[in-house]
Amino acid sequence: DDSNFHVAFVAAAANLRARNYKIPEADFHRVKMIAGKIIPAIATTTAMVTGLMSAELLKLVTLQSRRVEDFKNAFVNLALPLWVVSEPLPPLRFKSKEYDPIVMGPMRAKPEGFTSWDKVEVRIGDATVKELMAHLEKEYNVEVSIVSQGSLCLYNAYSPAHKKKLASKVSQLWEEVKKQKLPPGRTYLVLEVSASDADDGVEVQLPAIR
Image 1 (cartoon, rainbow, N blue to C red):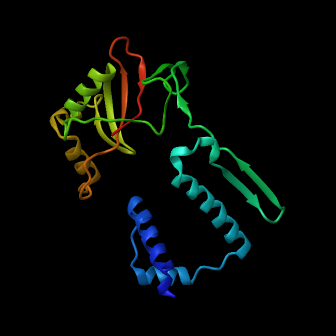
Image 2 (tube, rainbow, N blue to C red):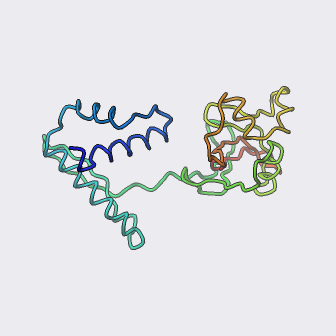
Image 3 (tube, rainbow, N blue to C red):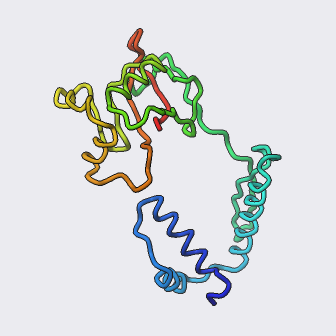
């Protein structure tokens, strides 16, 4: 029944998610065909999950008057039956360490106690690698040695061949290494950097760069 817009909603939501994760999208008729072949779930389970999710969505509508304790995670098994409702855990905070087993030495977090949700906002336009490094040194007193995005290494100071990349635009390097153009309308990249303190050389951990 196309008049209730159920399939239209599923198609829109699925394609937005597919676009976000770079998964091939599907048109309305293909979504309808796929949805029609899904083995029906037990009605009680579907109703329960829908109800729990609807309650959390209603909390988002009134977010201004909510505390984090108002939101809940639910772990349910109707076969037992088991109902466990818990408050969301706080995000892991990155803190300075006297000894980090990965770098085998001290590690300094800048800023202290940042989480994976935090980002370093860089607003200097379509900058070169050198300009980005200079900005981070000025703001955080760090010397950047590696600039990367996921598994893509855009710049590595330890490689002599990368020295010429200092004058290249970060966006240009991304397109060269990724071998694709930036999506239309995209005005930023989320990057990771390896850096050390400019004063004493201690390894520094920074949030993702946006």
